[in-house]
Length: 283
Length: 275
Image (cartoon, rainbow over all chains, first blue to last red; front, side):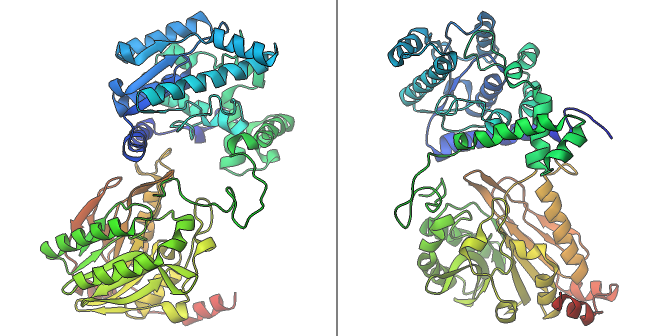
């Protein structure tokens, strides 16, 4: 049996995807929401870089606002990458800012009385969310999220933090597919190859924390949830241990609540949630 | 024949009706005798609970559009409420200044992104299958998913329809990994439309939506395919479009001289009936 990882099913027609996403982004932001452009939190990682490249193509550089929001946990190299992306895309100076959130995160962590790095990391992610929404309001923009389908599917994000955005243009692409797209968009190669990290504490890398490389994770997710194979079939197709497939599936199940609106306990005939079924574009 | 591949706004029946009026007038100016709009063209497709709130506006809009259709036929998509609280995803055929008939969809997709079975009552073939006589020939109308099953088109054609009109709101899927340089859904529909034209030796007129609703995007690709399976007119994809073309209905008879359409083995249908 062929055991190619990433599986060939993850390949994409990057040109068609780019044309479609740039168009939808413009339609959603401008035609539907009636806003001028988008605000993006740029970390210097592949997802936010790719999203920024797409947004500039779609909305025009003068309508894209880019903010780096570092803490002391942010590697210096990431800020350099941010500056490189901003220069590469020729983003106008008034549309770019570096806002150090260390003091805010420190203050909030002290207020809640926690030194736990996960608590502090989530405070950082939510602080970024607050700043991006404030900037969006100031510039008549939407907050454009940078989550990919891998992170979204296993719940590797902060609820109301990096996921607290208005739209997620690349969230139907697994990380492996974002890499294909990034190459097509001419995102610098070292940024595409850099180990992904949420940057919530020093030295954090996604693949180390998750214990699995993205190419394999994406192959498991695709086969289990897009192709509907069962866990045993996924393990056999990929030539991996069943326990690894089960671990990934358990991450997906445990984080289902993060992909949904908050639970509401039904009292009336018609509660928000299961039977409040209006389309987003309802007018 | 005019193909009005339009985008519509969800729930905005009044605004959508105005758009229909302008395209009916345009079609008439361009010499068309029939103008076809997409599925649920008066309401938008992903209606969910809005479906309950639009039938009256749809009925009024259809009446108003019919008055505009004295010297042209039009097929429009709407939500129809034949009895209180019972709604269907339907096509209204307008002509001679009136609503000639309303035909419901038979196969309601209820899987993946589709939720039609939750809201709509499916058509009953024994009661709802209709051939509409027009001054250019007998026409049968199907709605989107009806074309993904062999029986509706076959029943219409064997009952005398010489043109199959299929109105659709087909959302884009499979853009990621194209087949033959087109999104999978375009590839699939191309195969279906050509198959129906070839199997029954009829012209097939397919009119799909353009525009977007929530996550979904309607890819267009409306077209007319002749009885030999060859496309004779096609709208663009991913955009609104409007095309007018001429159909030669004498091709129906010619194409049947070299096909086995005349053989209708009823026993197959008896087998199907007992399954």
